[in-house]
Length: 586
Image (tube, rainbow, N blue to C red; front, side, top):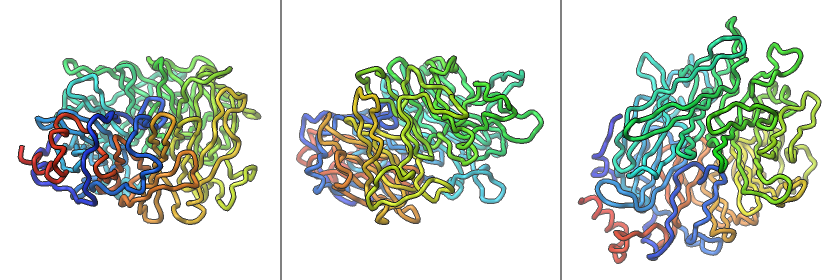
């Protein structure tokens, strides 16, 4: 790890607006994990500053100086009034594909620290000789570094940040789990090299091979246990699998591995020709989800579950599936703990896997199905599952044994007004690449390419999800061609805003905000440079943060945005620019 503390003295923000702190007494929210919570709803329900009525006053607060050492494809994380550099500040953290993390003042954009945690791995990502469907080889690090969104553990003081790096030292490829002190960037213990192996039905040992694997899902912290998801770099012709590995961490003892799960152990081919497992967990960067009991949920990518199984699927391989594991990573013991679509063979043949998105868990519901999960994939067919009885596999003739199965809107069964789009085939039509998000009995979906869509949810109904969506018109009109995963800010059940980053050709990106109850009402837009992958906005205390290929952007409302603690209150009569100078002089 290389720590670069001098950056605070050298880096000044590129100002795109100047704002003051908000009124004393505001409730200060933190964003410590992908999509705000372990249900992955993406909702911040404590946003009292940004409302549908005042977005006309939102301006740029800052864009950070210089450029990142690698693209940022993870969601920024935010801590209010946290210790850093010997004082207490609001801080936003950004991870990059160069295996680095930046810690910025969340109100001014000044850099507190920047640290590099090992050399990134460029080998699988090269245009000549590489093997990937990712564009990561085009970023300044020439490969993958920190891909999945970190998680912050506030049970440790100062808070600790956990993340996975992908590294290549010139000889060895590795995936490493790190624990970092958020106040300084220093590592709290030696990094843990990810190692995993299982024995399949044939008696063969299947082991994690780091060169052609990476950890794209956001890290999950649930009930004191850290869960890491692993998938491929996009290479079906090399050995790779889906893995979930769990760890505990203490400052005294470092990381201790707890358990391992492999998604496709029996698809290994001992004679050296494909397939080589697959069934990776990548989810477009979405995190593994966890319920209140600590059960883990995720979706998997393509795998030929029928490989050499002429009599049908034997039930131990979970490609193109939604899987539930116990907190100790106990494998599905019955159809109650997994779901594989009946048309799995067709999904595999068409590269229409479920692994392109993550799941969202809904709050407890009335009626026969109190514990609901919603998932979908590239084909944008939506699956509503009972988490207590997920449906298993009913193929090859079907139908799916689930709460509700919603065909994608490209089938023509829904009226979409002037919006025109086609199926995901060869990525020429609408294609689900981002996990759904939830707020106040509405589910929201974004596509790449394709439009933003919202579906009404009716709690307790036999068929709770509306069959047809409300479709935002920007895609059809050419305003954008694709979008990242949305985030929602609201004050409980009121004032809902859907924030999303969209882009056009060349990935020139725009932050947009819509009335969450009416996608026809766009209330704000602001430029945010070039999108690096599937950018997810972070909203906290009146400010919206977006990390893109080169820098961090922040938008807010003058005199209102930002969390004011005791130090901020003492500076209330001074401008943010004056406060920045004061911070630098310490």
